Length: 175
Image (cartoon, rainbow, N blue to C red; front, side, top):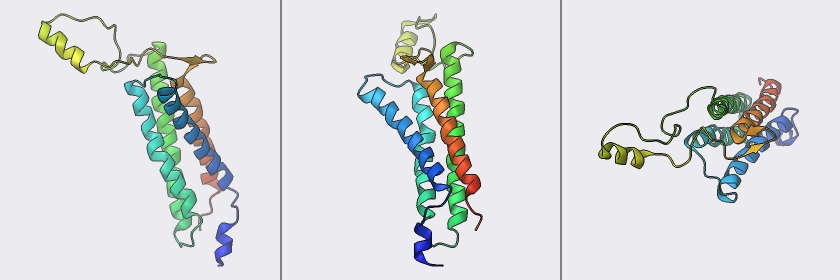
């Protein structure tokens, strides 16, 4: 096996690279809305980012190891790309949960949803609640684009990235 053989384009790589590009666009977009657009993320938004932080490096590792001459390169590539698919499916699930909270289909976590009115209790209880209260509410979408919140668009983008990566994964040779 020659070293040049490993550098040629494999039929699965474009799908994998495109999946990573989609994921990078999503996370960069989230940071852009936060840092440039002034939309602070809620607690659920921050949780939705975790699969991207884990998945993107895994996918890049999978693509990178495919260029090596390691005997285990195909297996490692399949593992890394498979974990990326899993991360994107988890992200889609988290985004779907968050979108459901925004639409009022189910209750969200008490740490970032609610009416904002104090319950019964002492002044000390109220001060404790204010100290642990989240400024950004998870059940109120700050922006809607074409009828979907950012959480809804995360579902769409995560499923697209997962589909592209799964397509690549299925085409990675076993050996």
